[in-house]
Length: 114
Image 1 (cartoon, rainbow, N blue to C red):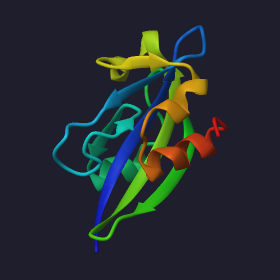
Image 2 (spheres, rainbow, N blue to C red):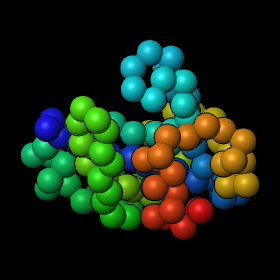
Image 3 (tube, helix red, strand yellow):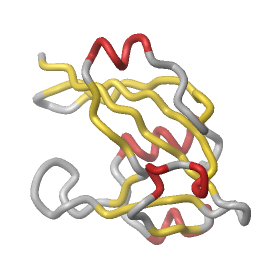
C-alpha cells in the first residue's frame, strides 16, 4: 500500500476560534472542510516533530482504500503562522455545522475539541 505523509495545523486566534478551509471539489475529500495542512516527504515527516510557532501534539494514522495517511498534528497561534491563510476562523462550537473528514475529526478528538 502507498503511504502519504501530512502535517496538519490546529491554529487558534486570541478568541479561541480556529482556522479551517474547504477542500477543492475534485480529489480526495472533495468539498469537505479541513484544518490547514501540507503533504511532506517521508524523510521530512519522520524527523520533524517541531515547527516554528507551533507545538507538536502527536501523530495519527488514517486508512483509505488505496493509501495510508500518516499525520503529525501541530498547534499554534493563527496570527503567528503562515498556514492560517487563506482560511476562515470558526469557534469550536461550529464544528457540527461543517462537513469534516473522519481523519480531521480524529485530530479534533486527539487535541480535545471533541
